[in-house]
Image (tube, rainbow, N blue to C red; front, side):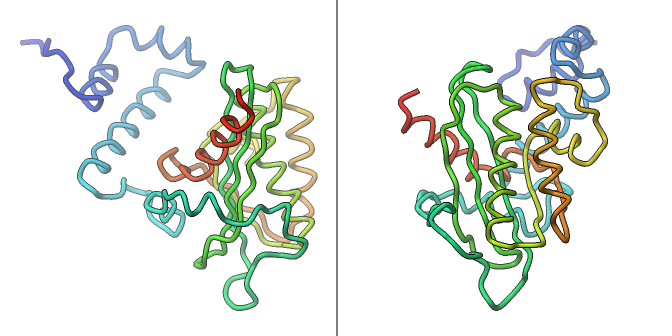
Amino acid sequence: MGDNRTPETLQDLLQTLERSQDLRAFARECGLTVRELRKRLANWRRELKSAATGRQSPGAGGDPDRSVVADHDDLLDLPPAADLSESPLPAAGSAILEVFTDGASRGNPGPAAIGVLFRQHEGPDLCVHAEAIGRATNNQAEYRAVLAALQHSRRWGVGRVHLYLDSELVARQMMGIYRVKSHDLLPLYQQVMHLARQLTEIRVRHVPRAQNRIADQLANKALDASGR
């Protein structure tokens, strides 16, 4: 007997989409394979379930998860990175700078902005960067956020950087898993990789959007401030 129940929650809707006979057409419209789309839908459903029960999603552990609970306006009031002439890393503790980046575009392409949160590994949140960047696509904005983060890191003389971003495309392109086929993204990718190669250590990790809320808030705050 088929299950024809009407989805009553977002979790039910995601589960229904996973079982949909039209998933192939939906995946094609998203530029994904059916397998990739099923995996993403399943991951999102687990994240929703974890959030509803107050638990972290499987495999999400580690220090970056602090950004999930540290979703407060006071973090948005941290010092602007542009105002700091020297490295914000404390003398004591880890020499690794953790950086959370996000880009936002309203229209894709449309008015866009970037947000960056800088944090000491196993230490405090340090500073932020938020900037409206004019007209751009979501992916261009994501790259611009990473570029700004690496430019600040280089200016401060920081050698070890761990990047966390919720753009799977940008993360996988930086890790060499995906090729950069877009002519609009290639110059940004080349600038990012040029700066990345100058670091002593660079690690790139794709994280769920729920773990990147501060950078997302910063980007949207910059867009709101620009009146777009």
